[in-house]
Amino acid sequence: MTFIRKLVLIAIACNIFGAATASRIAAQTTVKTSATVPAQSAEELKEKRLEWFRDARFGMMIHWGLYSVPAGEWKGKPIAGLGEWIMNRAKIPVKEYEQLAPQFDPEKFNAEEIVRVAKNAGMKYIVITSKHHDGFAMYHSTVSKYNIYDATPFKRDPMKELADAANKAGIKLCFYYSQTQDWHEPDAVGNDWDFSADSKRDFQKYLDEKVKPQVTELLTNYGPIGLIWFDTPRNITKEQSQELVDLVHRIQPNTLVSGRIGHGLGDYDSAGDNQISMSGAKRIWETPVTMNDTWGFKKDDMNWKPVSVLVRQLVQVISQGGNYLLNVGPTSEGLIPQPSVERLAQVGEWLKKNNESVYGAGPSPFPYELPWGIITTKPGKMYLHVFYWPQKQLTLYGLKNKVRSATLLADGDKLKFSQKQDASLDHSELTVQLPTAAPDKNDSVIALDLDGDVQVDTALLQQPDNTVTLPAFLSKVHRSGDGGLRFDSRGVAERWTNKDEWVDWDFKVSDPGTFDVVIITSQQKYGRDWEGGHVVDLDVAGQRLKATIEDNGKEENPANLYWPYVISKAGRITIDKSGKYSLSFKPETIKADKKLGLTLVSVKLVPAAK
Ligand code: JFZ
Image (tube, rainbow, N blue to C red):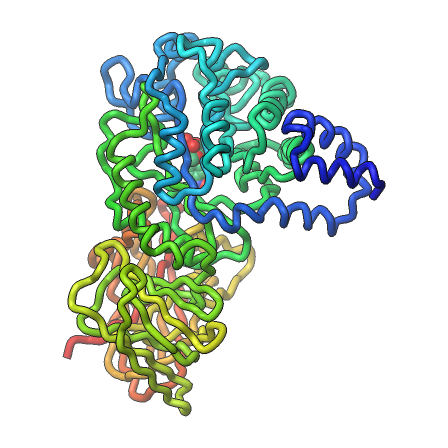
């Protein structure tokens, strides 16, 4: 590296030229040298970019645009679906939708107040829609007059105001930008009501003339930007995604690119909307979540998630090593709806008390959830997040460390505990004595001080309630041909239509007995659809069960409310002795009339009532 280049890089890092100058210089230097930069340093740059994101854990997403004016209603009729999709759902012609701009005057927009709400909730970054699929820029763009500064009576640049407020508060500002869908533009993707589906579209022209210049503006005029949240890649080509990645990194080498740029080219993975992972992930990831059932404001959506669900989702995402991006949809006046403000304040209160168990905390050492909740860790520490407060005591199997102390994090109270080991079974038990009532109705955290770094038995263990849960994502998958079985971002097996694909698990039983075997499958989002009638063979401890997947009842997973589970009873088995067992799950026939096929959340062995 030349001395000049080093200087320039240092200057960029310190931002001594100011953002605009620095980025111009960065653009020149990296363009020239990118071909010669060794792969290693590209990795290093990426690591550097990811630094703040790894620590952030919790962010605010803001979906705000012209769609907040109709707020889910068009010509007196409620329009089903997401608020920000109203133009598409109601097939509103561009010329009519444009008429929303003169009506949009969000006088109560207060960037400092929004940043205060986010910061007080414990959020470390804000991702706001600079342009959503409707194509309307929410900042002063010189690329297209179709923007909040030029086309509305508001005549302010809310992104500039947010950038200043976020900067002051030490919050990272990030921009959502819809790179493929733009319903305002004939050459972009998505609008087939104004511009017919078979019309000739020059997508590259749209990319070159709108997307790239606008992304350049966003990265040049608003100071350092944490990330660009690209979305719905659709039919963008790999080369085109790469062009955008390069553009972002050329202007601001420290700006991350979201997973939804397409073709796996993002700096991190985005989970499916509202899908909370139960299965961990190797890559850095983030999950975007709605607080009700829409991103953009809808006046009649009152289906607010309770604080207990928000806290649980936050903790669950963090225990799986991800970031939780929680959405608010401001009104056309520029205000975050009051129910959101209240919930964020309560999440913030919980976080203040239990902050130690979240920020800087690592994932759970166990690959599965516990019957009472989930775990986060720090070196020499384990945090038990108890969502279901047990009577009198909490028992944990599989912890190999010696526990030095157990403390209720919120008030510092010490709890009594005991430990025992059974060397022959390699079985260990920790029992913590609990007060009668849960100290926190959302999540009471017990901090364990350990004698060293956390060490646990990662095998699938029968739990203290004697249940054995075998999650699909922890199974060994036996593939066959080009089978379609895959796992969604929750960790649920889906698109299982090839009956020659099967799974099995190894697990440990410490308390033998008779068990009811149940198969948990998942409905589609919002409980829309489900396919049953598959016949499966289960083989466990030398006993065989043939079962038909039927709907014998529903179950709810509070972290993944949009996907109801279906419980299917498979029969009864007996395990005589403690020890290691395996269970195999093989389809005999799979029904795929609806093309859904078999899904699998888990197989459970539930102690049979005596
Ligand atoms: C997209 C947008 O279409 C939507 O309006 C909103 O902005 C949301 C955050 O992102 O919708 C998606 C994108 C991806 C999935 C689901 C909805 N997904 O992968 O499940």
